[in-house]
Image 1 (spheres, rainbow, N blue to C red):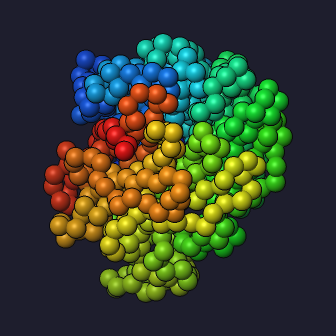
Image 2 (tube, rainbow, N blue to C red):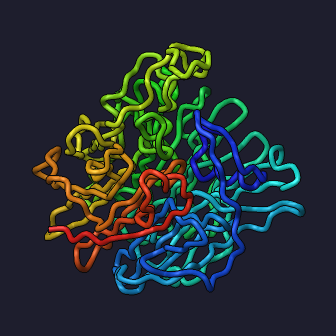
Length: 524
């Protein structure tokens, strides 16, 4: 279960009625579910309920009319995920609109997890992908299964269709961590109704990355294809995206994912691996490493010493293909992490004999290292010049902070300004903790950008939110997200999990309640 996405793990435990469990060296307590009461909700700035817990958000701006913006997020304390919508370019928001869940079998319950939202290239539809997790509450430990489903809206998020199955689960098949995307910059008759979905599917023999597509606007999906297998279950965090659409038969689709390599999960080096299709996802080229043997992997928890939220998902790629066909990937790596004998949890060494001091032995009985240090991640960028996306640049560091604080969970987007495709990257940054005496206890959202002629050179990092949030003991989501229109004022919208209402240092790190905020960044 530790390799599941964060909310899937919490959701399954909550469905089983588990209130306290241990994982990765921590004991986690899940707060009780709340009674759903829409009248208690506030719509400002996006999702800020004190009763329900919003996190792991996704955002989509209508490409041909930036007035319309849709956000999608967890709505913990209920079985649902929720959408919020704006009709004035993200200035104000209304919601929640609870996304429909498929009807469960008799005696079962169903919960939502891992939401993603995207507009179609022509702006006529909004797609929402998410996990539908089922179980018999009387025997949830032995009956849990899940599907990846997609719902759509044809009125800018006001209402949503019944979900259809994109990647099915079942016996010895548990799909997790879905992602959905389209041909962002290539609207047309061959692309407007194409939708792409990937997920990690856990099986009895390991796990695999699966891909499926729809040609009819998410009304139905093709049989999933396996694009990568891992007997040791070393793959996660896949994403698809549509690239140049050349003709009705030639159109590029790129799928990339995190691979932990054969030296152990969350230990040593890792790759970002990709495959490309030139025929809209029907056939696939060979697997290539967009990032090869990157040192070093993130720990399960954010350091120092296992102190804060789940962190290893920051290695998952965020990706974009611009209107010039150039592909961009951002991810997190920890250059300062010790490698030998590290068990990957980020927790301090284990006190095997109970004398109150570390014994240089981890909980698995092997020699150990101290827990994760404070410099637990930096943001890196690679690019490919165009199809077939088999050659990639060396990684360039985007974050420019001084040592002692972690950066992670990057998101990348492209916005054309005066004919120039500007590559914009935002991420979660802990350098704002510098005044507290508690490394990494606070985070804000920082950003930078680059453009052709300056590839590899990044503008100085700037803080783009106006508040500082307190780190969580457990979970704030496995990603942040960004989106932009193709017309109008060159805004990039960035959305993230916010905890700025937490004030007690360090006591409020165990407060489970999260909110979702967004901001608009005007590019030069």
